[in-house]
Amino acid sequence: MSASAVKLGAGDALIVADVQKDFLPGGSLAVLQGDQVVPVLNRYLAAFDRLGLPIFISRCWHPPHHCSFRERGGPWPRHCVAGSPGAEFAGGFEVPGAAVIVSKATLRDRDAYSVFEGTELHDHLRRVAARRLFVGGLTTDYCVLNTVRDACARGYPTFVLGDGIRPVNVQPDDGRKAEEEMARRGATFVRFESLAT
Image 1 (cartoon, rainbow, N blue to C red):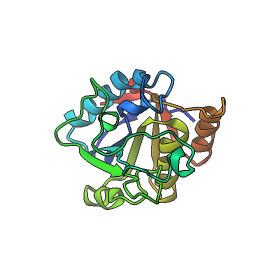
Image 2 (image 1 turned 60 degrees about the vertical axis):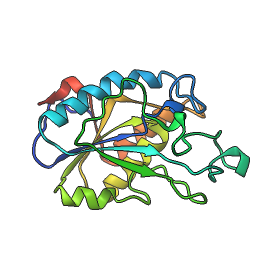
Image 3 (image 1 turned 90 degrees about the horizontal axis):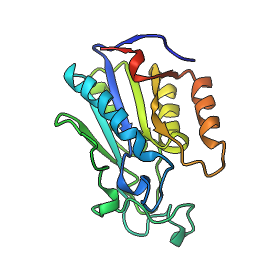
Image 4 (image 1 turned 90 degrees about the vertical axis):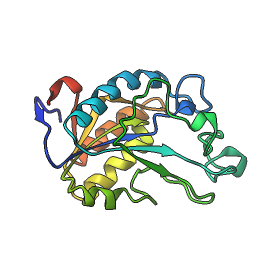
């Protein structure tokens, strides 16, 4: 489901997931064309910041030997270890000063894909009286999908930034399937040019 025009205003909040160096080309868990979301997401960040709307930016912030790493039987190579160069935000990613940084998957023996899981995001959203959520970042088929699942389950009308996401595609069609699932759950896909700011 696509929106022809969406007017931003009070009650809207932006969530950008995991635009970190390890997820970009050359990183330890590189996403194909992951770097291409950076300039697109910067436009959303600037628009929300200009309107004074709340912005939440998540980062994987794993301890060493995190349970998701292959060395511990998990599915992924070592990535986004807290404080490491690979855990830094992408070069050129313009984080507004007012943005709230949300660190997730910070416990050694517990993984978390959703920005809601094990964080204070929901409390933050209630504090700022958020009513609609706009979600983008990396990756379509993991952190974006799971964040959208949780947002929809909590009753938030949710918009996915269709031009500001990329899949890791462990299986070739994982990204497409994730987009279809998000739409089935009621999320609306938007692109920057469809926003009225």
